[in-house]
Image 1 (cartoon, rainbow, N blue to C red):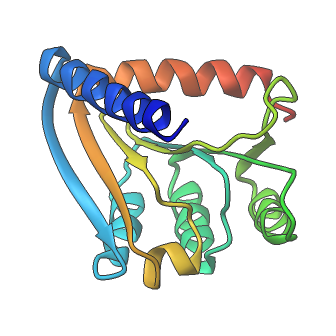
Image 2 (image 1 turned 180 degrees about the horizontal axis):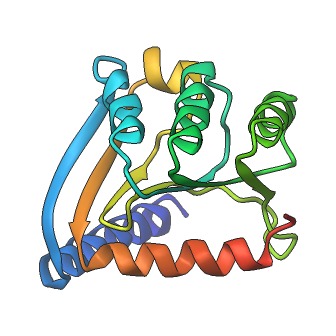
Length: 169
């Protein structure tokens, strides 16, 4: 079973690498934490048109504040969260965002869990990886995500919009 799991994981990784090689990615970068947690806040603060987020955990007050500020400056902010957590952190963030006028949704019931960690900025950049938007992920944990730019962002945007349309808004 361990051989199968290792082979399967390697196969997925190789498939992703091949996809990146042949996909329309114009640039890529890495954000690792805890040393660069502020880079994610800076990414959110850089948005001029839109911020679309699908996130398993959103509990960072800094992130919530950035999203509210973006919405107040006219950025289209949409946040989709997982409802079924053991803690109330998503419910608290959901309520704060909703009270501030930010568009928030619960994940579609079609999925057992919304485990994605996806941030799309202005339809031009996507951050995807292991980061939840929690204080631990931004300031304590070893997390690694990639920022991609190029036509590939349209694929992530399509997934987000499909999920948003299915969500409990």
